[in-house]
Length: 241
Image (cartoon, rainbow, N blue to C red; front, side, top):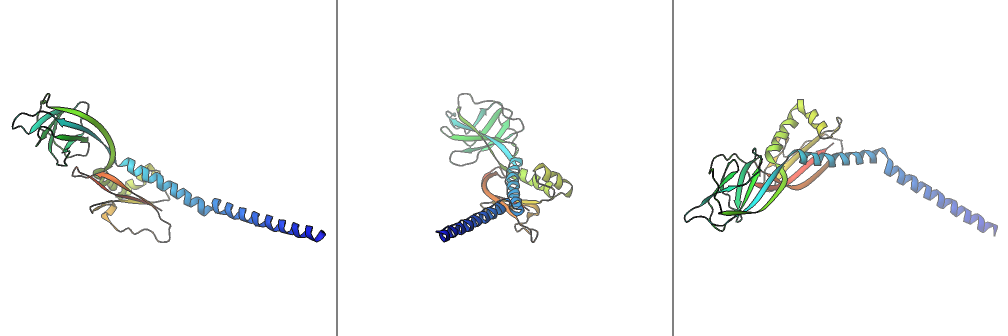
């Protein structure tokens, strides 16, 4: 009986030691300096990714317009849309995808190349090409505004301005701090269009990052407004080390 008790006590001791060592191993893994640094870098990367998007977005306001009644032989119209930012330019596209000649004169938007029954999306943004001129009077009872939406998307123009600050040694540190990047860390980024072409500092499509340092990266497919006024998709990649 005594031997059985000793054997049982020995087994319990071994199990206790194994459980203790397992607990210590898990605690070391979870709370080790290496793991803590990795978590910090991942959090910094996620924050940096969001900040880069936020700093390079623009607002696009879109109005759906139905053309009800144009006169015989007419192919242009004056549409009145109130309370649009005076600094915003205008662009318009038909529901079939055809881009229209579009001009803005205050609250009056001129559309050319349309007909009765057409449905047009009229868009406003700070980064559309300048389009002054056109009609200065509304075509009353010839149209109706059926919808209005707004969205935030990346801007190629803003990204290029952002790159100018990134590449300038006098503003790089200020830029890093404004994005929440620590002085000891560095970052890089690029945007590659689905149809080809890349926007990146120094226009490099292949990056040469420091050797022997762990690199953390994140990418996402996202919409962008090109400098030509067209919306496209591509992949934004952000890297930090």
